[in-house]
Length: 125
Image 1 (tube, rainbow, N blue to C red):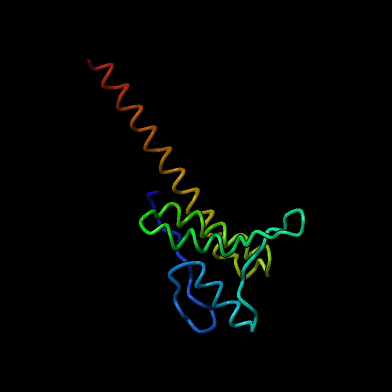
Image 2: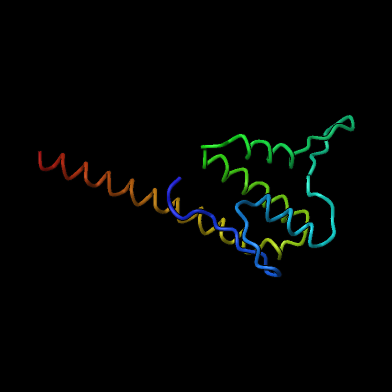
C-alpha cells in the first residue's frame, strides 16, 4: 500500500501518542476504568471466537507486512467503534476512510497514466 499512512491521533486528555490502534484502545479503556477490550464472536453451541485476541495476534505476527497490519488495525478500530461510543473513534474512522479513498484514487490515476502511456507508445510505433 502506498500513500499516506493512517495516523492515530494522540490522546485528547493526556496527549500520549500511539503507535497502533491496540495501544490507543487500551489507553481509552484504561482511562474509563474498564477492562481490556477483547470482542468475541458468539458461535453456535456456546462457543466464542476471541476475535480481538485473534486480531492482536495477527498484527503482532505480521512483522514486515504493513498491509496486513493496516487491515487488522482497521478491523479492530471498527469493532471498537461498534462496541463503544462511536464518537470517540470518529477521527480514526474518518482518517481510515480518507486514507483508503486516497490510496484507491492514487492507484486509479497511476493505472490511467500507464494505460495512456502504453497507447501513446503503440501509436508512435
